[in-house]
Image 1: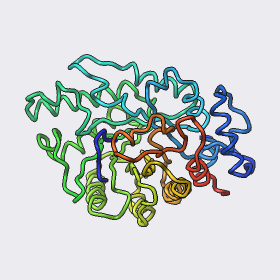
Image 2 (image 1 turned 45 degrees about the vertical axis):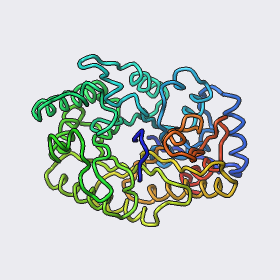
Image 3 (image 1 turned 60 degrees about the vertical axis):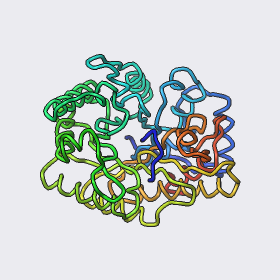
Image 4 (image 1 turned 120 degrees about the horizontal axis):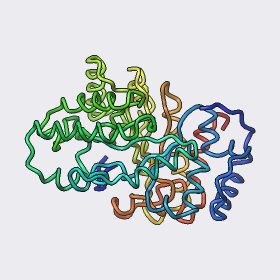
Length: 361
C-alpha cells in the first residue's frame, strides 16, 4: 500500500447462521463490550469461521499502536480474522531506520500475537519504491552496492521469520498504469532483473513461504494487468519461484471492474495463487445509507470474485475499523472504507463480506 494518492486449516462444520441482520447487531454489541478471545461454537458464524470452513484466509492489515493497547481492536481482530498483515511494521524504513541498526519490535509483536492466536502472517513488503529509509533513498550507491543491500535486506528479514510467515509480498507496485515498469531506485539502477533476483533470494531464505508480486489497479483486464501477466509468464518459464499474485483492490464504492473474476482466473490458470491483499471500498463523505448498501454488495462481490477462482488463497482487508483507515488522509473527501465503523460497530460491509465467505449465503 502506498502512503500517497494513487490512481489506481482445518476444515470445520458450522451451523446455519442467524439472519445476517441479527448477526451484525450481535457483532456490533460484542465489539463495544470488548469480549476476550475465547473460541467457542459461535465462532462458526464469524468471518474467521466461514474462512476456516472453506480452508482460506480472511485477513486484516494491522497497525502496531492499537495492537499494543486497544482491547476493542484486538478483540475484533482475534475473533474475525485468521490472517494478519503488518500495515507498516515490516517495511524497510521501519525495520532499518539507520544503516545496520534494526528495529524488530513492532514486527515481532505482530508475529507473536498471531502465533498465540493461531493466525497466519502475511509479510509485506520486501521490494518497494516507497517507504525506504533516508540513508538508502538518499545514498549514492552503485548498482553493485544496491544489489548487495537488497539481498542483505531480504536475507535478513525473511530469514528472521523463516517458518512463521506463510506468504510474502516480495515485489510491490512495480508497474505504471500503461504497463511500463515504474521508475524506482531498484528499476533505475538494477533493471527488471531485480524482480527475479528478489524472488530467488526470498525463496532461498524461506523455501516454505509463498512468494507474491503485489499491485493495485490490476483487478481489471487492462494494460497494467497485461504487463504483469506477461512478466509472470516469463518468470515462470525461467523457473523463478513466483507463487502468487496479490490484487490490492482499493475500490471506490460502486466501482468494481466487471472483468475482475475473469482477470484473476487467467493468473490462476498459470498455476499461480491469487489473493485479494488490501481490500477496502471508499465512499464520498458523508456516506449515505444507499452507498453503505452498495459498499456491502461490493465487499461481497470482491470476495466472491476471488473465492470463485481456482487457487484463490483468500482475502485481506486493509485495516478493520474506519478509526484507523488510511483512506481519509490519502483520498480527500473519502472514508468509511472498512467493515467496522470507528466505534467497532459492524457495518453493512461486514454482512457483505460475511456473505461472500459463507458458501450457503
